[in-house]
Image 1 (spheres, rainbow, N blue to C red):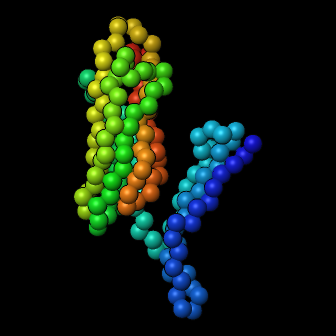
Image 2 (cartoon, rainbow, N blue to C red):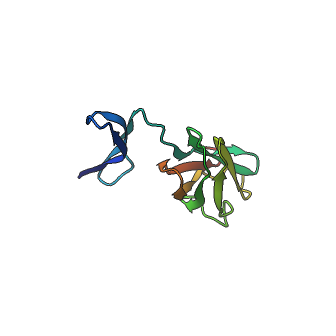
Image 3 (cartoon, one colour):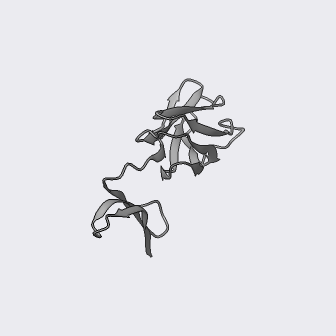
Length: 153
């Protein structure tokens, strides 16, 4: 099954009917999986979007970067939370829930998720960092992955 969306986020017209600005996001899903195709169309539009990166393992933490692009002239916030995959909160990492707040002009914040010690040779495991409940800007990329273990990709 193929499903998707085409969301018009903003549009403005001149009194003549000409389009002055336009912003849309679209995505296509196959069999309910992650978007196979996605993108944006912008014309004279400066719409801010929030995203989260895949984590970088930095010593005892998985560090996700939350970005706002382009920067806003107002405050923007979004909730960040972890979610289990093959790695489990309390056994492999510390569950994290926090609100990330962007002051006017800010582009990025990092969220460090504490990692718990793994036995040597443990198989690779994954967990997720997810964005939700934005204020002031929509979410573009809502989930990043943290890969733990000696055999991580």
